[in-house]
Amino acid sequence: MAEYIRARSPEHKQERMDAIMTAADTLFAERPYHQITMGAIAEALGWSRSNLYKYASTQEEVFLALHSAKNRAWIEELADKLADAPLPSEDFARIWAEVTERHGSFLRYQEIIIAIIESNVTLERLTAFKRDFAEMLPPVTDVLSRQCGIGEEAAVDLYLRLLYQAPGLWNHFHAAELTREAMCAAGIAEVEGSFVEAYADFVELCIAPRSA
Image (tube, rainbow, N blue to C red; front, side, top):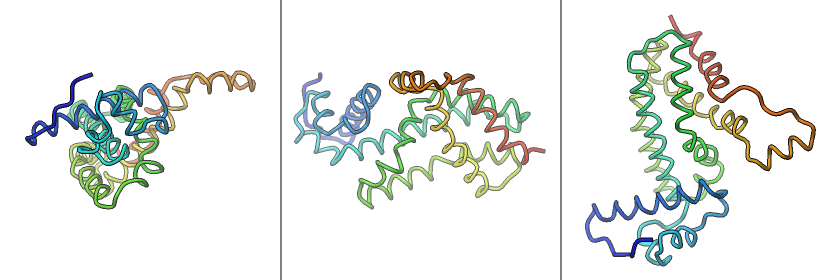
C-alpha cells in the first residue's frame, strides 16, 4: 500500500483517482458490490477515509468512472477489430462476440449501472457520465452504420440493444460457484455452449436483416 501524499496538480489528482479506481476494481473482482464501501477502498489503498473523500464522495462515483473507462476500452477494441466493416454477418457477429468476451469484467459493471449506481449519484455527476457516454459512441456507431447501412440514430439504438443483452448472457455462462451448486442440487442441467457462441448468434440476428 502506497503512502498517501496529497495531490497538488491536475496530473497528480488524476493519478490518485486512477489508484482509487484500481483499488475498487480489484475489490469488485473479489466480492459483490454491496460489500464495497468507501472504507474498504480506503483500507485497500492504505489511506484514511477523509483522504479518499478528497477525490470521490461515494463509491458510486468511483464505479461510474470505472464503467466509463471499461466501456471506452470495449468500444475502442470493437472499432479497431471491425474497422473493415461491412463484413459478412457471421464474421462481424463472431468478432463482436469475441471482443466482448475479452471485456467480461466490463459486463459486471454494466449489470449494475442502472439499477444501483445511477440511482445513487447526484444529477450533476450523472449528467457528466451520460455526456461522456455519448461522446465515446461515434467509433462503434460508425462501424454499425457501415455494417448495416443505417443512420446514426438507428446505430445508437442497435448498439444499446447489443450492450444490454451481453451481461445477461455473460452471467448465464459464467455463473458463480454457489449458483452452480444450487442448480446441481435442484436437478437443473449444467449450461452448455459458450458465451461467444450464444452472443454471436444474437448479434447476427440483430444485424442480418439490415445487411445488404
